[in-house]
Amino acid sequence: MSISPDTETHGPRSLPPLWLALLPVVLTLGLLALQLFYYDDFTPHIPLILGLAITSMLGWMRGQSWFDIREGIFHVIHVSMPSLSVLIVVGMIIGVWIASGTVPTLIYYGLTLLNPSIFLAAAMILCSVVSVSLGTSWGTVGTVGLALMGIGAGFGVPMAWTAGAVVSGSFFGDKISPLSDTTNLAPAVTGTNVFDHIKNMMPTTVPAMLIALVIYLVAGYAFIEPAGATFENITKITTELQADFSLGFIPLIPALVVIVLAVMRQPPLPSLLLGVLVGGVVAIFYQGAGLHDVFTYAQSGYKIETGIADIDTLLNKGGIQSMMWTISLMLIALGFGGALERTGCLEAIIHAIVARVKSFGAVQTSAIATSFATNVVAGDPYISIALPGRMFSPLYRGMGYSTLNLSRAVEEGGTLMSPLIPWNAGGAFVISALGLGIMDGELQNLMYIPLAFACWLSPLIGIFYAITGLFSPRATDAERAEWDRQDEHVMDLGDHHLADEKLVEEVMAHQPPH
Image 1 (tube, rainbow, N blue to C red):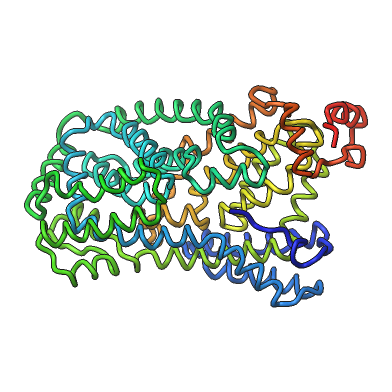
Image 2 (cartoon, one colour):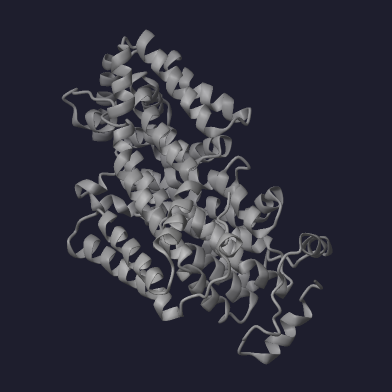
């Protein structure tokens, strides 16, 4: 899955000057800041629509037709339709799995079997395993992650901490699973092998996960009191769950079906949809729901009034409609990203960055930062991987470094940072699926962003490696031969305007033949 360069279908076009390319980005970020921080209103939709309009106007003033810009907008939306489809199915699965007793059973056994003090660490590990198996961070967040939020609430763990552990584990899996779309996209746009790509991400991924694990263990012992109100709350929740649902093995069947299909390496979307259907059958024949009730749960979410606020908050969730806020935000953000790409703004900004780097460390850091910045501005993890991956590849080849360094960089700045940006597709989904209540003014739950340690530690470790030269492989002879065979573009660093002439000579010495 990648985004085609304009030159393939529209012919070459001139890029806007840097100040003009930055103008719609700066104006849009300003509008977002005004909405979020001045008006204290977490609805970024309108600022992003205005940003899309500003970008389109810029392209029109530079001679592009509206139909050309519109095609770019719709192209990016089309590329991301599989993710939007997963979002719809996850909304259905949340509502139906609560009605089938799947989520209540997971919460019940989690509260009774897990040691509260190791809950955060266990949550991260469990989400990691499930995400690697499913190949989708979103599917993991919307199923296992939701149950873990309930368990965390029962243990008295602050919601932001639980969400941070869930996000850390879920997006770790999305980063290294060979079933993940982003894990396949990154090597595809940089010209590397997916399994070599996964292997090359381990030096940053493993330390980040280990550090996060230690932090969650320490935090668990710090937050969970060994006795008292916390365990009274657990008893209250488990007793009510037993009263409202038929628990046991049968409600776990929908989750087991999805896991088995994942182990069999079946595609995530039909696997999750089958999980919805099996959940509906369990809800009807085991929980006593009617067929129309199941339709309603899938469409509008599950509703229950127990008189216990904690349980009502945990279980009144799901349905396709619960995802519409997120889906509308994603469509707008994707459209904005498509407009920025089609008008050449993103490409102009990346060219400006490439023209100013002076070492491999600077190149690698710039690639990570550019992926992150594209995530912030365009709101889409696919663009944040595809565009920098395509633009930086010739420079890596020209310096004689393996593009495995680049595929790792765009994963770290793209996949892992996506859930930490609230208006990004990943961040918006996390906020909705985990019920963080940001749209209702619960802005303190945005603290999940710094608490998702594994996500932001990995790019920092990657930058450290780039500066020190550790785990930064040079291109092998086989890789250079492959560049020749594929007729890949290798940047001529003699024409690249680096300030240090000595450095030019150094990197030219490593330039592979082409």
